Image 1 (cartoon, rainbow, N blue to C red):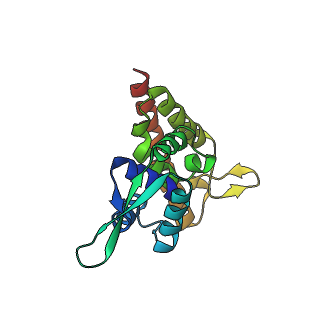
Image 2: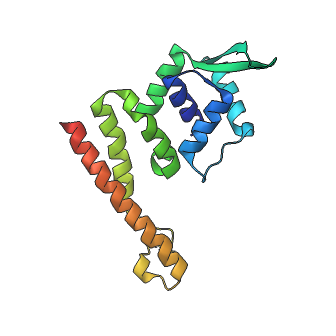
Image 3: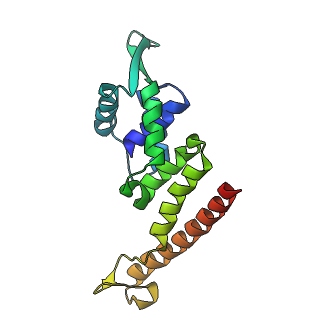
Length: 174
């Protein structure tokens, strides 16, 4: 998730590390805080792979600042990751939101639709947080108030997302 977010935000414009961390944190939300201990190693990996470069510039005081900029190979890798997301990028809600944030960069409606179709297929498969044997349990089967709440909220969220995905797929088809 973090590497895709780095590539996506740097495709928009060069950024300093702090600016990049702030944007990623805002996108990922409170559920996935971004620490320097995860951000800077990811930046280093992408830099070593030739996907981004650091440029030094004078700071406001005496310290130099590093601006991160995407390379041509970085742009190509971003497009590849958007067009061919991993299974986890499709099934994990936070990772999928990061993918969605930059999916418009693909520019090809058929490829965008293929990605959205994978998410819709995932959401339409029966699933639950709780099972009776192999069968997913529904909210109305839960005696526990809090488990029932989890399932009720998940069902409503899934319905809303499926409805949006269907609308988006129809719009991409036109």
